[in-house]
Amino acid sequence: MYDQVFSGRFLYRGSFQELDIGVNNGIISGIKKHIPGERKILKHAVMPAGTDTHVHFRDPGETDKEDFATGTISAVYGGTSTIFDMPNNRVKIDNYSAYSDKLGIVKRKAFCDFGLYSMFTGNNAQVISKESSGIKIYMGETTNAAGTSGFSESGIEAINTMNIPVVFHAEDGKCLEIHNKIARNLKEYSAIRPEECEDVAIKNATDMHFNRGVITHMTHSVDTPYAKEVTPHHLLLNYDMPLGSYGKVNPPLRSPETQQNLLHSYTGGSFAVVSSDHAPHVQGDKGEFEFARSGIIGVETRIPLILALVQKKIVPFDVFYKTCILNPARMFSLRKGEIDTGNYADFITVDFSSMERINDYRLHSKNPGSPFNGFDAIFPEDVIIRGGSVIERRELVNDRSGKYVEDLEPLK
Ligand code: DOR
Ligand code: ZN
Image (cartoon, rainbow, N blue to C red; front, top):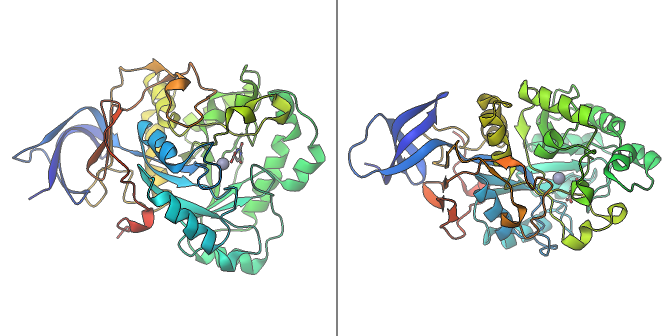
């Protein structure tokens, strides 16, 4: 009757319950108290695997920093079964041929499921790939992106009709230019890319009235009708910490007070999504602060860091589940994020007693230097994607079998 049956304590309709789950073709087909026959027993707490809506895996073009294999391996070790990769490759993904070239390259390397963003630069709406999973708009300059301001009504309308998430890097280009000067440390870096540049950009983004607008990596809470994303680094790090250039990121880390306020808003439920903004650079790019490149890795530590905060009762379980698992899957209309019939059998098992300190040389990124070194984390024991084991007892047991989200079953 089923290809496979999993047995364990599953997060189902808001609570953990002892259940048997039948799976056909990677999709959950039956959820019962007991299903007779052979069953695969899952230990610990079983929940749906996570979705990371914002990563930079640098493939193609800068595979000395990361590639799609090392990036997706890092994702699965961290309990994430689907990632969405940003378009600021060395050659920008702002037209359909760049998109299909990238897809052809990364498809064969993926260890987890994935989607790809295209970059909207204001005048390229007609040449953006119709297949794009999402749109990214850089309002100010950052790694491999110039920043744009001129958006025509017709361009905005064309993007809106694609009916996919439109994600804003909200730092205003003109505002950044006024402030731009040298920064020798994290505090000075926050001063030359101040919060007011975010506020201007968020207002301008909101005025474009996209149906599915998202403000990513907010460093402080601002009212907007768009969905709000926050990163673990803005929640947990601030410019007074001795992180050097490994803490250099756009938008910058803020003051301890701003960080505490952000964490407080997050635990109170003000944010829809936690995304990692995983942005690796080679060690040489992270030398002297003034000249260091911006970006922090995080795809492998996103869920483990927040799980540790759940265990310490700093973050409510429900806030963790919605922001790291449910809402990111919903943002892209995936059949994921919730254990239910018709959804993919993407599971993680979590032993809440297995708290440990992050040791960055054990992370799986090509450039594992992390400002979270020494932070408490709970890594998943097992990771299952579409019914297949990818991680078992914290070891990789599968080869590249990640699928492009366009090749997954759509929501009914
Ligand atoms: O710090 C950052 N690094 N911010 C971005 O917006 C881009 C990212 C990167 O790609 O390096
Ligand atoms: Zn980013």
